[in-house]
Length: 379
Image (cartoon, rainbow, N blue to C red; front, side, top):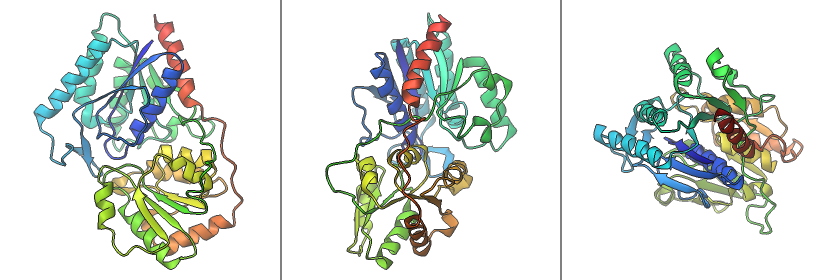
């Protein structure tokens, strides 16, 4: 079986990271996988043996997801987007996959509807139509207008065989963030959370007893969080702080930081991030899907500062749900300051250490099995 996964991350790199985790599980199951990425290159992410094709990249203009920029930060032209759509459809015709998996669309990425619609029509026109599914994280950005919900349901009815939600329904259900119509419900499958294999406790001492501060791999994301953490480090010299800057502009961002306190280390995001969490005193971070699973799998005490710019609510919903667990607290961005972070860390010190989560994290392998079963049943 051949699987093609199409993913375009516009702000952070979490969507691509999840697609790669799925890809590794599909390969491990003995199937072939080809990931097509339309966001900025993310060299820090491990692609392993996965075949990955990079489209001419786009990203959002901050939280303005209706305005797309190219890799140089310039507004994209119409011909640029047409070339992306044509290349995507060409790749599909060349591969003739048994399964086509679109990441988030049509429940999001509506700014890319032209290229996804062209892709879905090309899939329908193949000599043997592939099984078509959409891959969704646990919590979506709720539709701001009824038309957005209707668009997703109509697209599912016209083009999709399955809606895969990478969550445990006992923890969170799709209807908590999105209206589930009969069309969607009839195609709905929960896979469990899509997480990498649990990290092993590292032999090195890097990160031991530190406060690890991170904000994912988005461009220009996390500035207020990093500023508050550095201010907290100055006020709290007893702790050692490690601040990890992600994104393509990490080196430039770090170079601009001056007069760092002696107890703070600022460096680019590291591939051994999860190993650091195993030894850390605590994590301070946003609350994206992948980071949340990292916290659960490592048992690291955590302060979540959910990203809520531009009216975003997804991370707030996730952080509120997770804060019911021991050793996890939240800090709203409006409350963010050195004092609030130090107060949250003191609160975590009083909480029992939460054991690493091991159940419900096999969503990647379950997705691979599910796709093979569903695609075979279609034939």
